[in-house]
Length: 229
Image (cartoon, rainbow, N blue to C red; front, side, top):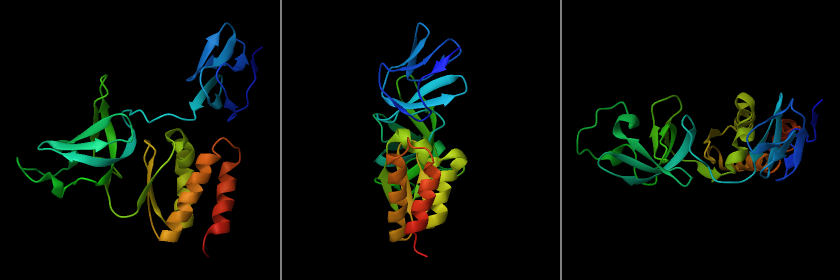
């Protein structure tokens, strides 16, 4: 009979025995030592069926194909744009992936995206050498105008988004702000300045308390207490 020694969403430390028995499977951030599942990093324990995994509490974003991210244009060349992905790796946006428009050879590409612009894009491909290609073709992918951008711990992004987008939607509805969450830890918020500030406070609260249970109710109560009627 297997025994699980850790509670769901409990912080675990390297070397901690999370479970004993062959009925439980090791997930990311854990390893098997005989019949024991042991943590190999600091993280938030997640018990999913028969699998235990650890969500890291720190560390930089690593680009993955399919991720929707927020990037800053850092270079404009004759063939496309180089982007800061808020990671150790920059990305390239080619002309064919930037727009459906026909772009003539030698055209001024800054009329589409200029230095310092922020965009919501999707990672199309990551090579084994960590060369990252992104695309602007897809729903919700666009250049961002106005608003402000904050950075959060990338490992807290799933909690900020919530199941099927429920958490971020609750913040949007309460603050009447437009919010785009990048999986690379950048979040764009656009609305009334006071409501932008409230949205940021709610996001920071989620980031700080992501390991606690009942977080959705706590954020709902926080928003209801602080929103201007």
